Length: 202
Image 1 (tube, helix red, strand yellow):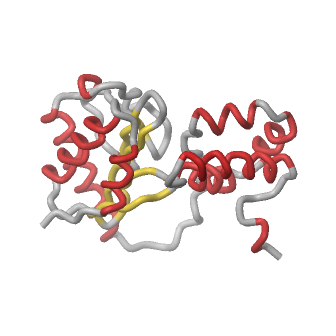
Image 2: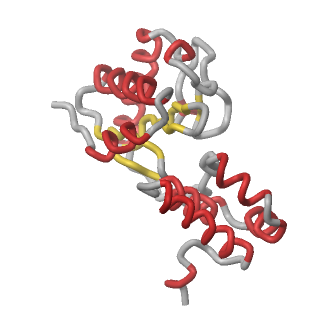
């Protein structure tokens, strides 16, 4: 039975009009490829999980992203993935027509699920924790950073995980008013070299 997350519905409902049909279509394809896949939200992105992360999607101001988590270990016969290491994206998606054919995506998703389930069953020595990768920065957040020299310099010095904490905080705002307030606060803290959770750090 499909395992849906109500937060996906809320995210898609608040997305720009161009993005709603894209996100809805991808969601449908993923569940058709694997009815047992689960939904969750990580770093402000919509993730599909089967033992481990399988694929993810997100909507931005003018385009959507869709990608596979362990892409560097997956076959890519149609050459649709951009080579970005572990996490690989399709080209930016502006309309449903920018997506590969349904049967092609279905094949990629099924392969990704198979890999995720197999990888989860393999038990070996604990590996060092991989360095976090940067999530895509929303355009309004990037513009605010660029407008503040201190914030620009400090943000570049932050680790990927620290940058992702701010990105997630901004993208998870439920209203425009909250997002605007968080943007202003984030720029102030970043300019001071503070992490998102600096208040709780000793």
